[in-house]
Image 1 (cartoon, rainbow, N blue to C red):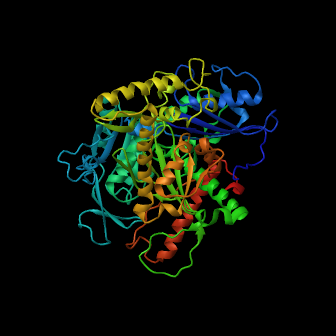
Image 2: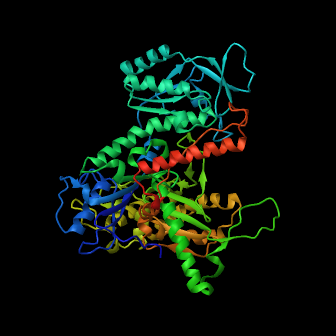
Image 3: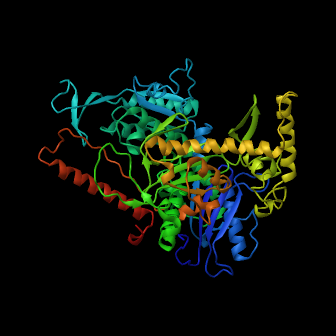
Length: 616
């Protein structure tokens, strides 16, 4: 079992996953407590009648229980007793999906004001006559009078200045007009109230000087959020680089407000050293370094790290103890699709499909010895060019609403969320997948946290769920009419909705496996998330998977995984193949110098995160 942890000291350690429906808490308490065993806690992410911030409330409840003394909700929590808080959150994802981020202005090279709106002209549906596009993130555009181009040495126009850079030679076709830019930006701030800006100039990855000067002007004018594309992502291609800068300007203030709301309930809290956030790439970053464009997959990333480490350890131990009983279905040969007939010896590794079914959505991923990353993704119509775990998401979770439309059972994509939640949450909510599982006996109210009702002490409401399904059955019978067979029972209706939800969750797994040349039958299905165990067997049967693993902490594995994650620092540097300034330097030596410089910057960043060399 991979759940063993380091010996506890005299401080609390919290790992928290703030999901769309539930907030999960895994906590290690001081050894001096009467009961020093780890604490597991689930509470609603939104319950405005009882608390303002779910992660903070979870910390309060754990400390109150472990210390054996009352801690009033209105009193601040003493953070001097806390070693660290590691948190993953979906607030950035939801902010992007629901367009609830910060109003900001985009500064871009003159003539390219509509470049991000045009994008790459890819059509989601090639036969759709009227394409419906999501609106751009920026609310206004300032076009900067500047222009550069990358060129070969000695191939400038003759009248323009040529500058040598790490990427090659850059010709300054038009010098940056700082006065005009300052005047335009001042109007946006003073007259239209903008306080955030994203800066993305053409070829800024090769020549960032103009962006840096624009950033200095914005800072001088008092902009509180400045996202510069060359600092965030010094890579070619204006559209994804510009959209990434826009995501950062749009979400970072949103994330900072969430952090401020979380921190205001503590005393003696050092955000920079005590609070770490899960990033989209599966690594942790201090709260001071946690930015919007790296937060989009913060929520599900902890679960990927969690199942990758725990499931592999469980399978290896099981194969060692009982190889004959489980056989090759647990550990199979991991061979990626290949177009050649090499005779290279295959390495035996665990091939695992992660199945994370939460309250709002289901996230699936694949692990075969190492975490799988992608460098560019599209979320809510916006391309983000940053390292992210390769995760497929479908809008089917325990809170997905159930509809009967034109003779068909429909599950989602609308979610009942945490507030008001499914019918059984006692908040006057909507019929959801959770209600179907409750009616079918897959959820046992006596084993489910009694956190509902005005006093947060009542169980799930089976009677309300039954009445809601009886109403739905009447609608189904009315549609079928007198000449057709009626639905025999409300259980039959609930089972039909569960089957629809299962198929919706199988589709992204097939896309992640079969569509890429991997057979799902060769994998183990690692199930976690609050609703995963209710569906894992049916999903495994549909995919032909013979083995499924449900960890002891499956319900809070995304939180638990954050305790297993490492602090990660990325350092990007642009490279070019054309002749550089130092004509005598060998290309290999030049690359080694860049790598050495990047390593130095990474180590400095890790030192700033208060990590010792033994923990790197």
